[in-house]
Image (cartoon, rainbow, N blue to C red):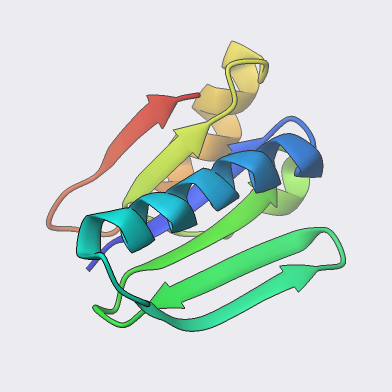
Amino acid sequence: FVRGIIFGATHEKALEQFNKIVDNYQTLYDQDVIAHISVGNGRAEVTFTNGDYWRTAIASDSAHGLACNIAYIDIDIDPLTIETIIKPTMKFRPFTAYNFY
């Protein structure tokens, strides 16, 4: 299963990427694949029927303690924050990966 976090410099940027991911899942499977979705109060999260889970997070000290195996990282986040806050969240196996948007 994918457990992904979309890290944004702002909530708005993370939410924009979140919406793209949700749309991509819908297009890929050509059906309604959302088991649960919640958007509001500076946070968005979705669980898909295949068990994949995505959420948004602001790249700040409050992200310590989060865990994922895939991270989408806002290109505007500074490299030190990526190394010290975001990369340590990628701890689920059997694979981990990150990409920039």
